[in-house]
Amino acid sequence: MSIKLRTPLTEQDTDKLKAGELVEITGTIYTARDAAHKRLIETMEKGDALPFELDGNIIYYVGPTPAKGEQVIGSAGPTTSGRMDKYTPALLEKGLKGMIGKGLRSQEVKESIVKNNAVYFSAVGGAAALISQRIVKSEVIAYEDLGTEGIRKLDVENFPVIVAIDSKGNDYYEIGKQKYLENKNNSLKNLV
Image (tube, rainbow, N blue to C red; front, side, top):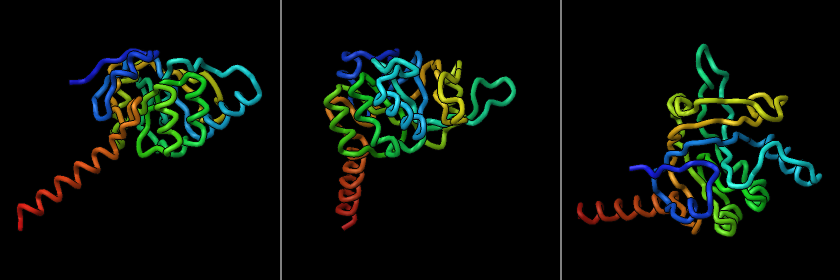
């Protein structure tokens, strides 16, 4: 059974989540990939206003394909999160509460997640067409010149994710690997 969350996230929301839990997000999330992250950081360094409020919000690491026909958006699967690691701590310090992507995060990002009581969600890679069905509205709000990497405001309903790193620093990628090794070792013992 999934936990239902509505954006923007609060400290109470992130406090209760545990690595490995299934979550369905409803509300507004924002997209940004590498180039958009670089511009966000440059904007912050200049002291200019960001194109959206970070406080309590979630960034989805995605560069969707163009919509076809009646679609709101094209395929919208997660991209590799590690590419955003060098930018993430600064955004968390400014109030960002969640990220959605896939794959491992650096130790620096994990420590920043704990320090800022945030959460990292993982979306299922390879399910981009299915995931895009949970996006009910899409609008480019900044950096349109970046094409598919421009920042979009997405309205989502019951957007499915897994808590990959919770606000206490528990990492489901590490937990899953440990469980696999334990099961593998137990299976080998039973064969002998």
